[in-house]
Amino acid sequence: MAIGMADFPKTIAPTAADKELAQESSRQLSRFLGTYSVGSQFSAPDFRLRVQADDEPEEMIVIPVSAFRLLTDILTQMARGNAVTLMPVDAELTTQQAADMLNVSRPFLIKLIDDSKIPYRKVGTHRRIRFDDLMAYKQEIDKQRLHTLEELAREAQELNMGY
View 1 (cartoon, rainbow, N blue to C red):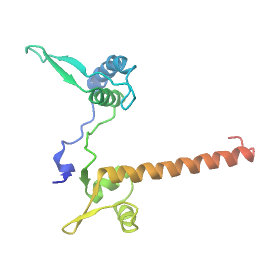
View 2: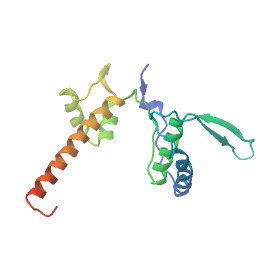
View 3: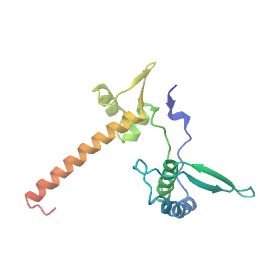
View 4: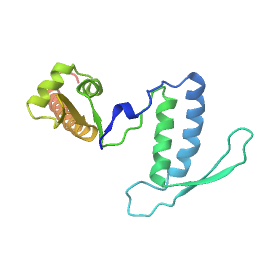
């Protein structure tokens, strides 16, 4: 069964207090990640965290280093004031949700789909786009934009345009 966007809670922007706490927390957690990178040839240990809610006994939980890194990244984004939504790569989006993620109009996205630039599947009469397919398209288009920008900058330097 496919996972849809409706299966996730609404995105909520962090408050000023959240931003401040997230900044300090991410700073503290980042110190532990300095020597380990996800996907490196060295096996990173699992992390043991002590968690305690108000008036509750402390508990020890163990999480993989990849989840620890993700938690740190989420806190870093919150510290910057960004709202964060966690989504599995196999989630399916409506065309409107996909258009919103690309910051384009829905008709433009439909044209991309019709031109076979983004894969989709039909659910009845509705199109659904996998999140990972959308992100693959976005990465490719971002790579093309960067290449074009580098080319323009190179040409501007060759023409001594002051850039």
